[in-house]
Image (cartoon, rainbow, N blue to C red):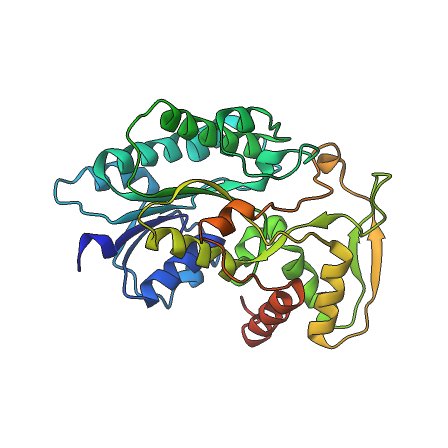
Amino acid sequence: MTASKSVLVTGAAGFIGSNIARSLSADGFQVTICDWFGEDDRWKNVSDVVIHDIVRPEDLAAWLARPDRSLGAVVHMGAISATTERDVNAIIANNIRLSLDLWDYCRFHGVKFVYASSAATYGSGEGGFVDDDSAAGLARLEPLNPYGWSKHFVDRRIVDDVARGERTPPCWAGLKFFNVYGPREAHKGSMRSVVHQIWPAAARGETVRLFRSDHPKFEDGGQQRDFIYVDDCVEIVRRVLASERAGGIYNAGTGKARSFCDLALAVFAAVGREPNIEYVDMPEALKGRYQYFTQADVTRVTAVGLAPQFRSLEQGVAEYVAWLEARPDR
């Protein structure tokens, strides 16, 4: 096994990370995973995947420092991803410090590097969703919560290194993931996708509840997001790893905003039930920190050949619901 086929995936027990690890392992990569597994069922996300090694996050620095260590790529998906998290010290340790340490490791050891940024860096979105990764472009963004700020912090540091002519990995990309949904997200609790949250009720023909809007431009259920199926995100990562020249921060979205009502209707269609939707007040904790509209500009990610043929919302939801129906415990 050559070094180019040896990959470290952080956050590999989680949602996007486990799907990436699974895909790379199936393709013959020697995959080492790094994550905390806790006491829930996230171990099932990789229970049937051929894994070369598992590293605890607190042991990662020592693992990387071994003189015989040889890696082709690091795919860094590990983070505190809850937009409601208020412990900024924990966010700094997990989202900022680890990301920058891995960036430094990859640039000084000639290792490809892919890391998770987020659409949360765009804040309210009033300035649009163009993935302008210049220093000036990033300076215009105003994230609404500590999670978004942590991702923005890392983006700006990396762009500053590039602008100063500092060494970089041979190939790298920061991916601004939009609203990702799909298999292996059950462990995320309240942060899992709306598809996963409403599927059980829809499958039983019961009422599905969505948030009312408190924004005059959006009707109830009319809040719009760029929903992207997780396998399309995995494909973007794989294309970065296959590239020899990629270097930049790119949107990972479909470029097509759809409403939460559209999403619910797609779930009801996938389970063969008549729609039954009602609206409830938005929690106070989300007011003032809620994105009413997101839509990735996919011009750059398409131009550099990293964008796959994205699934439509209906295609992705139907595929996901079929997976859930076959694995109700997941």
